[in-house]
Length: 131
Image (cartoon, rainbow, N blue to C red; front, side, top):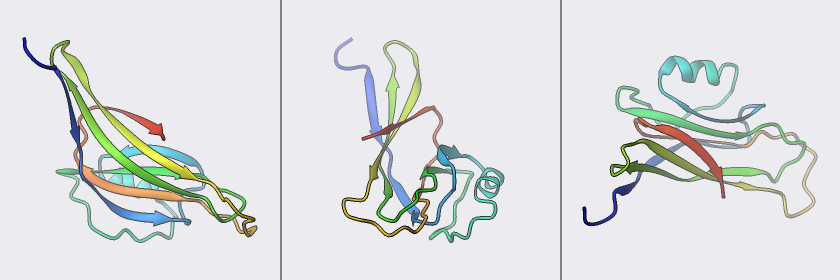
């Protein structure tokens, strides 16, 4: 066989919410249905910027949990699906994210930074990786 048998595919995503009013617990997860999303966001006062068609899309959530001050943020930086056809290994999806910490004296106001995105259905084992 000529060439590489590992095929990385960059998955496009759209931000639905990014801000300081997220989940109180640290969370990294992929939601596959409206029911899962309703349960995950129960009691949260967050408006998503677009609708999700769960027949063809999933929702990825990265939340830092509650912080004691302002200045924290999180951003999903990439979703890559890797296929290894040579070794017949299961597909793997790598979701990278960046955590920002305050670089100044921050106000003592509790925040819960969260980033929520939608993408095409993820049909693979998922691993989250801070960068």
